[in-house]
Length: 180
Image 1: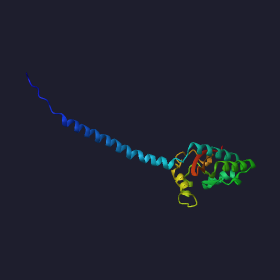
Image 2 (image 1 turned 180 degrees about the horizontal axis):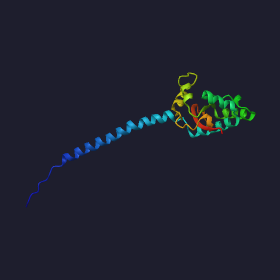
Image 3 (image 1 turned 45 degrees about the vertical axis):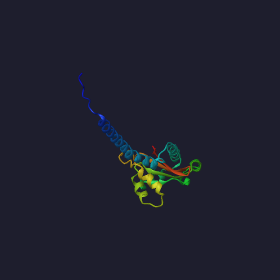
Image 4 (image 1 turned 180 degrees about the vertical axis):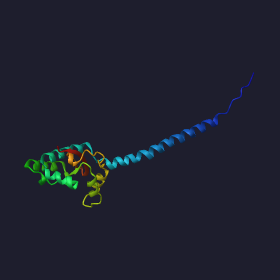
């Protein structure tokens, strides 16, 4: 009888296990370094432009369209923004009552009307300590919208920005306003 020679393969399993282990640890380290910053960004921006805030800012836009005079829009053209939280700015009694009840029912603290491009408003807010840090962070988070040159106050495009509280947390939203 012929004896066959057997090859010792006991060391191969150890090397294979080490290679697979290093590969798995590499994948987990990549996931860890890329996933946790995303969670941090989510935690930071989760109160910005939510469905609830978009709904509220839509109604703020409707009240602004219905009750603000052309003088207010001209102020925004010249200055770049206008605080329209004061319900006395609205021209008719329906606008004043709508503004007051809207702010009260939804815990709205601030409503701003800005030009479509938020560059002037961002520059004003950046170092102004009259605004909360959270509001300044939200404004710095917003894009400038300056690349769309067809949407200017001269063509009737503005932006409405609101600040409100929900469950003792400040939340923010913005929406485009077209006054044609």
